[in-house]
Length: 122
Image (cartoon, rainbow, N blue to C red; front, side):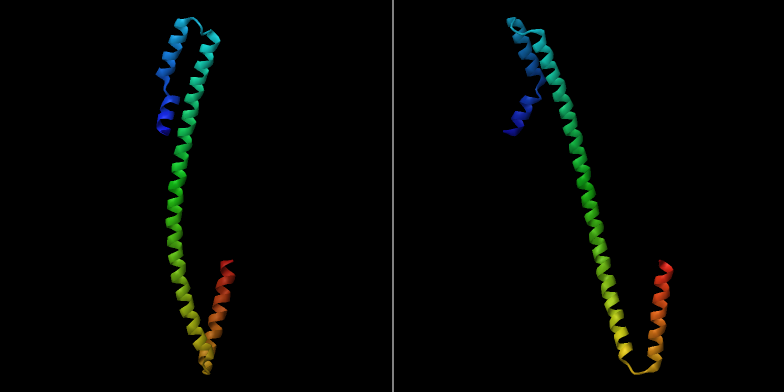
């Protein structure tokens, strides 16, 4: 099991017990003890870094979910704006196809107003 392996890797009391047995036999030198201590310290640092990375990954996941919600809302807004624009274009098409000169004047004024609006927004 992967959890059993992790438990053995980070099991400090087991390593301390192993050091005690080795020292009792007289076969462990002080350099081995310090190397084991350094390994334990490095394992602790690595576990802290893994924990920090996990926290960052969770935060990234939260941001992605929020961004997806925002994009879904924007998609809905663009769909409604597109349908509104297509309706407006259909009405403008009817207006342009009519032979009445008054409608052509309204169309020309509308085009001028849109051009002025675009100019002012830039």
